[in-house]
Amino acid sequence: MPRPAPGAPLAFRWRKWDGSPHWEHECVYLGADQWGDWVGQRAGSHSFRPGREITTTAPSVMMLPSGRQDYVLTVNGDPELTRVYIDIAWAVQWPEGGLPTAIDMDLDVVRRLDERGVYIDDEDEWEEHRVRYGYPARVIEALEATAHDLERRVRTFEPPFDDATADRWLGMLAELDSES
Image 1: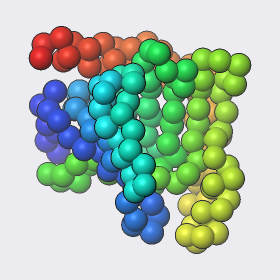
Image 2 (image 1 turned 120 degrees about the vertical axis):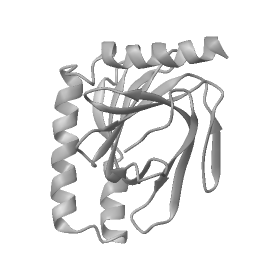
Image 3 (image 1 turned 180 degrees about the horizontal axis):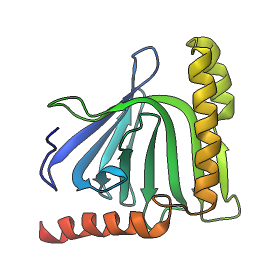
């Protein structure tokens, strides 16, 4: 399926299980590698959801994995203390001729550069929403296993969860900025 040219602006849209809007991020397409498609968010870009809007203070890159639809990897550049943030997701996709979309499933795997280290976040929200939205048992089981597997992979710096892979894409984002 064709993708935009590197540097092309796009929006990455998240929704919740019931279809309601969640985060939307202003991004640029960076390219693809063996891990998946990479998009970047420049410092000063906007992200918004109902009731909240933020302007980013650091660059970041997001990877939509090839052959999987259950997570999106985000890696933040300096000066962010949260280096890795993985949204456990459902239906991560790049529809034909469209923009990337995903369903946010609440659980997150985080690697911080401070004493907090690596952990699974938002388990309380996961418990609340699995009841509120009525997540099917097969979805619950699959995504809990995904979260624990990704936590292990982040702890061991397994590519693409290592710094070198993301730094390559952060470098490409910086190059786009220097060309404009």
